[in-house]
Amino acid sequence: MFSLPGSSRSDRRRISESGFATKREAEDAEARRRVEEQQKLELAKAGAGVAAKPPTTLSQLLNEFFAQHVDENLAPKTVERYHEQADYLHQDLLSMTIIEITPLHLHREWVRLLKCGGHARKDRTPRPLSAKTVRNIAGVLSSAFARAIRWGLISTNPVTNSEPPRVKKHYGIALTPAQQEMVFETASGPWCMPIFLEVCAGTGARRGEVLALRWADVRDGRATFARSLSQTKQGLEFKGTKSERPRVVKLPESALTALEVHRRHQDEFRRQFGPDYQGGDLIFSNPDGSPLMPDSVSTAVSLLFRRLKLPKGASLHSLRHTHTSHLLADGVPLPVVSARLGHSSVRVTAEIYSVACKPKRRKPHTST
Image 1 (cartoon, rainbow, N blue to C red):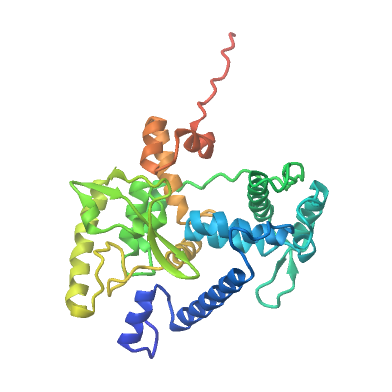
Image 2: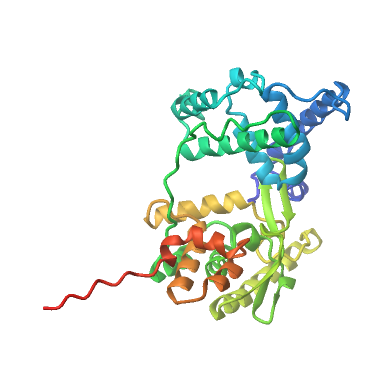
């Protein structure tokens, strides 16, 4: 978060505490929250209780799916993404009954989405959606239909044979040691960006996990990643890690040295802000102690990478991929790498980094 021109200290503090970059964003989010609450009340008045009639149309099924499963069980960022993806579906499809929807109907929808499913930000003209986005939309629908089967509403999942578009496998970009060093030396954006990037690169941790680190989490040269900072349209939220299991990662000596310098600078901010300094013991924060906005950090890093003319597609996540690639290249066992990254299983690590895990084939020996 950055200070707003012309805003008072009390305004800035209130905005920081709410987790929004501007007062306008906070007001818009509050307005959306009130609308959603009103919609929930209207749904309850309509009889959405235990004895309510089961959903018959796709629109009703999605509403039930979100209310009974998504909104209650998934992470806030995932919930937001599911809702955004469902909003792309055509009204004609949403109004159809779930028992009459066939794989052909859905296949037609995938084709439509690929051609003109989205809208340009400026003039709202139709634009194509990527194959990855369309496949994600198909995934949401498939999950909803799977719930319908479990609820006894239908017997088959029409998404199964609808042929959603295939997505080309994306291989992460690994930076060279020289490129990483250049990134650390030229980092710009929030005041703590250089050391933030160094910790990301030295631990392979996810963006939200590093942004949620507290000084109490660093002991004896090791960092304990037990939570993550998530950003949604409703604001910021500290939640568990992706695997919901804390993990301890040894920090490189260079990162530990840089953290000592970083802490002294942060203590100066604590003294400057005095009682207005926000608590929370965060290692990486705004000068007033409030949490950094994860999306703003990623944007700043992407701009930095483009300015440095790093390979196209390089992003903050590239530091995690670089860390993993170096570990595998050094012969670190896959289970150890998987545990360090916080993956749910070794299989996940092997699938993501399948190229790096493949042993090099030796050329057959030929006699002369």
